[in-house]
Length: 129
Image 1 (cartoon, rainbow, N blue to C red):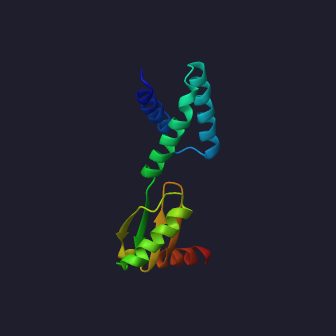
Image 2: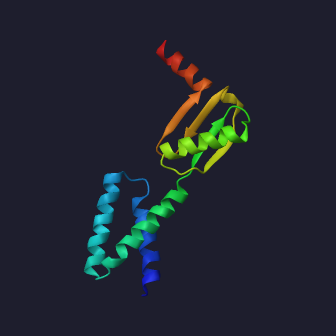
Image 3: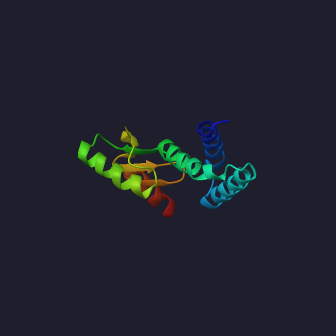
């Protein structure tokens, strides 16, 4: 098998094994991959495999921003940039409108939720009383 094909196959396997796991678990998976590649005398491929997998996982990891009403493009873009960096998901968000949140926004990924909506704040007040 040529190196390009091996990198593609190992990258897909690494993504599958690392998806949804903590950083510590991902590290264990990568160390195990390193052992397997070393046994096959192909450990020189590890850097390229990990690099490709990280790039692919970053592309897949999108986040969503929900606004109560339509926002000016510059406001939406600025919030996407700020939240994307903080939520480790780049700057590419799916933006949608949900009037039921009354005001503010909700940002979510598979790991994080930021509820800065008026509805969310009212629900929190209700729980406290």
